[in-house]
Length: 244
Image 1 (spheres, one colour):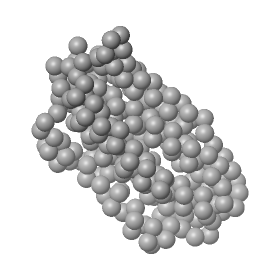
Image 2 (tube, rainbow, N blue to C red):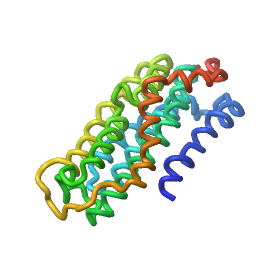
Image 3 (cartoon, one colour):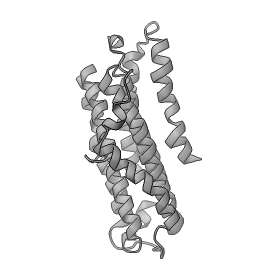
Image 4 (cartoon, rainbow, N blue to C red):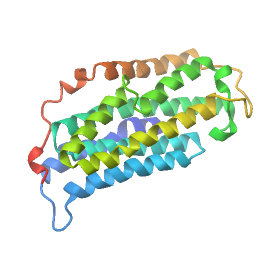
């Protein structure tokens, strides 16, 4: 249920902004100019979600707050009102669904075997779970925006669109790019590296679980290496006349 909500249903609001709210209500109402309020809130969500993720010891909460931060990039791209930003937002909607779903699955399987979700109560799992560690590091690198994997292109395009709208939005939004490696690498290192700090699972990832993750990992590489396969389909974006 959590994976369905974060990976799929969480995009309903972004789709509503892009295809319903913005086209139907192009002008602000009264004093509340949402054309600037919403992107500022999006930047705040990027930074706040990243800081909250850094503060978490519970692996599931860490992934959940990282999801909030990534959704901020989507909203920022939509309200850049240009092609680059909105293409990046849609690309990030796809990327977010892939990465967050994989992260929630991995965290659930690790906590099931270790008996805890506290990342500070476990370490050294890579020695007993090498395949899980290999898949986990790929997903971790995708989540922090490593070039060559899918999230990098989407985040770059949303920030490029935000820069065209207002450079300050892109500069503050880029703080999320700096903080993402902090919480993601701390998560991976705390769980997989070091001397075992608690009960060490005796079994690695199961074949069925690996087969479930394989298409998600493949898409991370495919989209990261050839994002044009998706962006070339986005031909009706960019409400440039609204950015006033």
